[in-house]
Image (tube, rainbow, N blue to C red; front, top):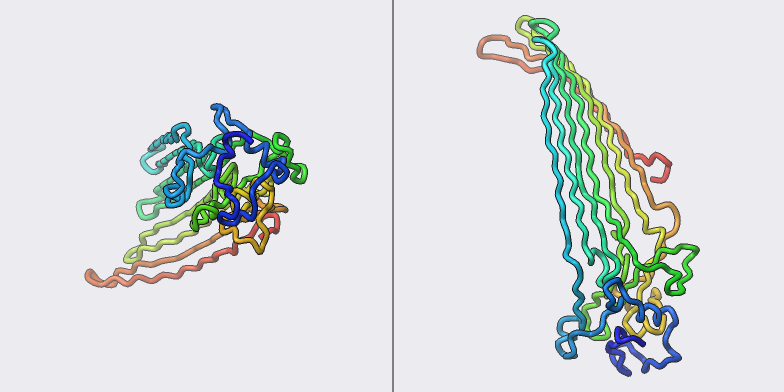
Length: 321
């Protein structure tokens, strides 16, 4: 076994029932232990903390260093006012933001699986005001907001590199190995996309349109309005393209013994997600109103109004709510 396999697998320590011999080593685990990332280091790190007491106190015995995490923020802001005439003008505002973050250890404790978190937003607003008469003004508004946050974990290796057969998929499963053989923390050592947020995200769009008529009629200031909102929430979840394999400790990883429902695996569960995982949620809202500000006297104004709103139910466009 490569130097990367130098870990605490002493006989009878923790949950290790026996010493590891050549006959006990799983062929897939052996390939993983001997795999090297682009910089030449082992995928499974060698121990760098040799004091067992210190390793037990900290819950780990290896420190892994990688490239610097990079964060970029691009922003654009614009504002345009256009006057068609003394009675007609339009105002437009736009904002754009793009914030990609690249981290070598987004979800993986080992090198070879950098994660890119793409986040950003866009905001657009349009307002058109038309003066129909000295006592009547008509205003239309349109707004658009887009939010996105999506994580993508890259992989240097594929299933075929390690001899893994996983329902025809060539995406390497994430691997969680608990360290409860040296501590009671239960914090797993993660290799690859070993998280529900490894390859998933959301894209949300909101559209809003409204119109308002303002009419001054003697002592009455009348206002009539209508608005419509549509929300789109797209959940993109690619976790059905790969699995997560859990091992209770290093011994069980080397011997290829997966966590079972009755195992003491803490957060290192074995999961295979099947079926359609993307969801495209939609909802509509409609509102309308009429209002009268009636100036009864110079020191007395009565506000009368009636409003009706319809908050549409949340539904999935493919019927998969």
